[in-house]
Amino acid sequence: MARETGKTEPRHPIQVVARRAGLTPDVLRAWEKRYGVVQPARSPSGRRLYSDADVERLRLIQTAIAGGRRIGQLAALTRGQLAALVEEDRQAEEARASRELAEPSAAAARYLADALITVRQLDGPALRSILGRALMELPSSAFLEQLIAPLLNRIGTLWEDGELSPGHEHLASGVIREELGELIDRLRPRNSAPSLTAAAPASQRHELGAMLAAATAALQGWHVTFLGGDLPVSDIARAAIDTGARAVALSVTYPSNSDQVSQALRELRSALPERVSILVGGRAAPTYRDALRAIGAAELGDLPSLRAVLAVLDSSPHPPPVGS
Image 1: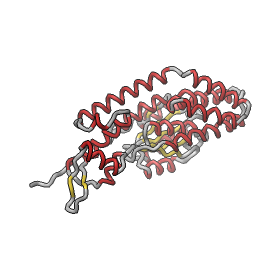
Image 2 (image 1 turned 60 degrees about the vertical axis):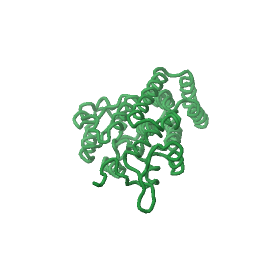
Image 3 (image 1 turned 30 degrees about the horizontal axis):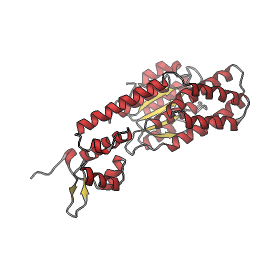
Image 4 (image 1 turned 135 degrees about the vertical axis):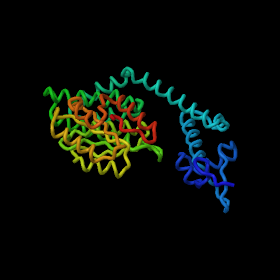
């Protein structure tokens, strides 16, 4: 008989399959015994061997369970039925999240007002306490989009208007950096999740926009590498290549329409593999629209637009660069 090939060939041991599907070997064995979710082949020595199709089926089941389904409801479904159910749950979750984010909640507005008061008072511990409570109370996406992003924008505007000093801005940035770092650290993406590298390029010392992008990607299930600010293009490109990044997110806050920044964008595009998308946001990003179009980069107006781009990139194993 011809040797099996392709997705149905049994070739993966249970440890590999469990890791790829986000399960433990014990759970996988229990599911097989009780529900027959997959039927692995056996090696000559009696070891379980699974196919790529088995791995895909188990991933779908695990995703459906993460969305609130029970294994007993899923075990008998075909791959097509599982995929349809997962997609239905995904769309329902996106609709729910969109409704939640359509208008800032009263809680987010209250936290924003309180946070601005503590920034004006240079009260770092109070600001840390407010943001910590907000992180526990608000959905993570609302914490980023309804509190942190507006807070950063408001602080930037007040600084430009002379109402806040560099000291106010530095104090707030330090506390916000801690909270975003805590949020990113507690998220654990699946092993097969795509990767994003986030940074602010040379001359861009305000790095929190890039960190906000990293946190948003982490919430979307991505692996993230946050490099910080004021980095040479060569360092950003090397990190993206070394981590196998699907995308590089840059924050550009100033100056507007600088030849130096435009040149850095061109150099980054040349240094990266074609498959890596470049995503650029920040207060000054719209002034580089022509430069972004020239290199096929995506301009990000806000965090929802970043989420949308990440969803497109994650939906295809080998998508073209987003801006192309």
